[in-house]
Amino acid sequence: MKKISLVIPCYNEQESLPLFDAEMDKVIKSMSEYSFEIIYVNDGSKDNTLKCIKELYKKRTYVRFISFSRNFGKEAAMYAGFKNVTGDFVAIMDADLQDPPSLLPDMIRIMESGEYDSVATRRVSRDGEPPIRSFFARMFYKIINKISDADIVDGARDYRLMKREMVNVIVEMGERNRFSKGIFGWIGYKTYWYEYKNVERIAGETKWSFWKLFKYSIEGIVSFSQVPLSISSWLGMICTGVAFLAIIFIIIRKIIMGDPVQGWASTICLIMFIGGIQLFCMGIMGQYIGKTYVESKGRPHYIASEGSDEDIIKVG
Ligand code: UDP
Ligand code: MG
Image 1: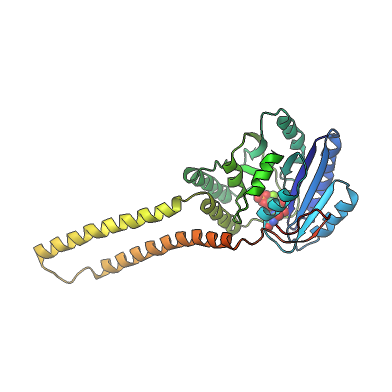
Image 2 (image 1 turned 30 degrees about the horizontal axis):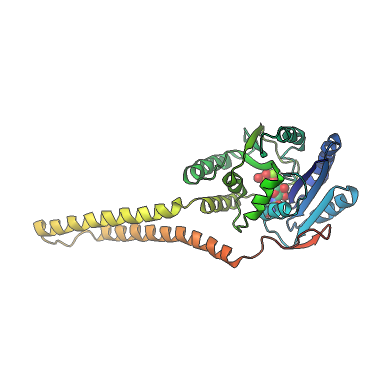
């Protein structure tokens, strides 16, 4: 009998969890030809999420859980889940039912055809999302696909079903600055894109503020592209070229017209402009150096204070 593992990152999901469990249990009961394992990862929730999870653990034989010592972020939660799965197929899913469990049987069927290594989902509409957020999301996907070799699909959700080998490869990629959408695209493998209409979150609210998303997008770009670094050297070269031409111009003007004291304002403008570009470029470099610093410390991705069983890896 094949085993399917589901990884569910949860941060303040006390309202969604009972609804998720009910929905998921129906799906699991309808697929008796498979055995299941659900790993709930409590990402340092501040509400009663852990209590909810423990209740589910008592109630359902297929539930396991791991609870972080603080909030480490969804990426760390996914990583912890992947590290602990034991199934043949592994799915990652949100707790808020935005990733409909009802798609799972179909996704498993596609996997069983043997043609694909993973079935990923993509929403074809962004209904229910603020327009400004959709706009920036679209721009982000356009930019990152131009400047990196990870194939990142617009509208792709993290919701996907993968073969165990693929998950093992993802765990092997031990980078601390994790941007899963990029990692999934970067490792390749044959992926089937399953399209569905956006579903709104069932209860509670989104954990992603605009600022958090903005920082995550910078993370994505810095993790998967070095183009910003070359942009800064190009900018430097262009500025040097322009300055060189300006010097020649000034020398010629001095020879022809003498040296009237003029151009104080334009000098200040130029100093400000070039200073600004320098700071901007240093900022870009700083981003990369900062990431290198974090990687070089080699700290764990997560620290768990509790888990459902002996085998759960508590620090990883
Ligand atoms: N999540 C998490 N840690 C965080 C933020 C979110 O584990 O720091 C989980 C959250 O509980 C949910 C999933 O990640 O299961 C997606 O979060 P959310 O629904 O807020 O994101 P959205 O669907 O709005 O992109
Ligand atoms: Mg959601």
